[in-house]
Length: 320
Image (cartoon, rainbow, N blue to C red; front, side, top):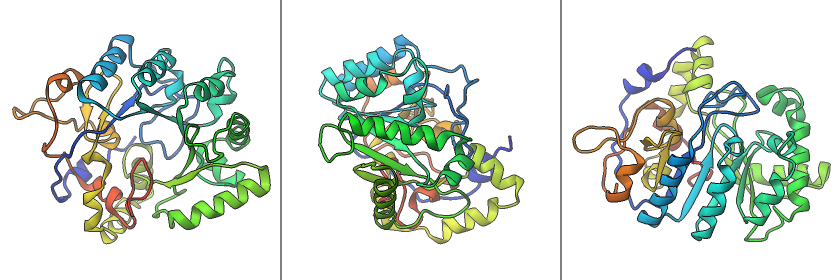
């Protein structure tokens, strides 16, 4: 795989400082039942990296110590971590909102038949990846048969009450562009999604998030191999919007890898660009027990233009 990191760190980006920590985004491991072309963590069925029970207990300790409001669980398929249900249940006991970034197909896998019911019982916020409302586009990005299983997963969630406008059972979808271009208007695309999914399948959901593809990992390697890396970076920088710096997710979110190391965002995690202390030493979850990150300088590089281009992009969708 071609590495974009040297090309990205060579590009300057405006400085950003951390605000009050609100969200702990935890990557439970890179094991996944899918291998999507746009996946920035290179997740797949052969990955072995998984967060262990000791580190998961440390996550819970940090939530208590820092008063974290939201636990955002990612992967891979986070549900494939053997301690996923334990972490969700314990976090919910603390009154924390838990987000499960679900690829939908996991709900149809053998051994996960009761997963949707568990998510409903725990009142988990489901953020589900569905890069398009047509079969051809989804299967092209994520593999043959993925669209059909995604529809089955959505129907199962709807049957349990997700996506029906109930505050305790939110279902939000995620759109990623299918190539080297920016997402369209989130508002307009959400309306298209709602109409097509309702008319074609009777499916309902709450919100659609549009997320810009980052020029890293599989997608970044593809850009280099096709000779499109420079033109994509030009697209991002030409569409840079300074006002998006105020609301980028790295200001209130810290990303945690499966070993407990800290990063300013999930993308920095994949680029191995950890947060550091005043001695320039990488930080760990253990540091969050006693230290607040407020005011710290955020590690930036060229890929940060992906979050600030156009309407902006975050794990919660467009910024404006």
